[in-house]
Image 1 (spheres, one colour):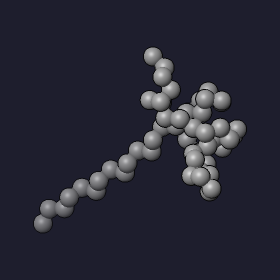
Image 2: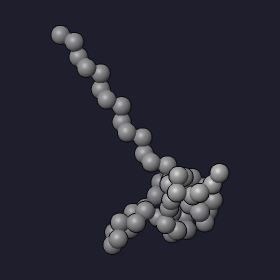
Image 3: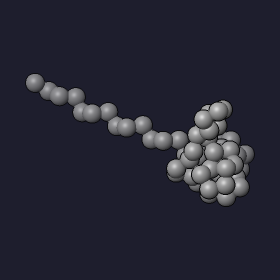
Image 4: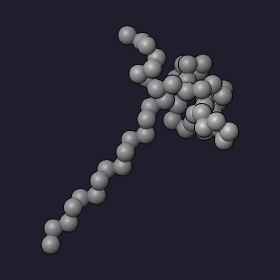
Length: 54
């Protein structure tokens, strides 16, 4: 009997901190408003496609 291969885990969305100017791999989520913020400085994070670079 053939088994189906396990589906790959979804890749986490890349997030960028405009204040620290680097990619954030371990963000925090605000318990009140569910905003995703930088663990280092507390700035709301953005996805690279929202940055308007290029």
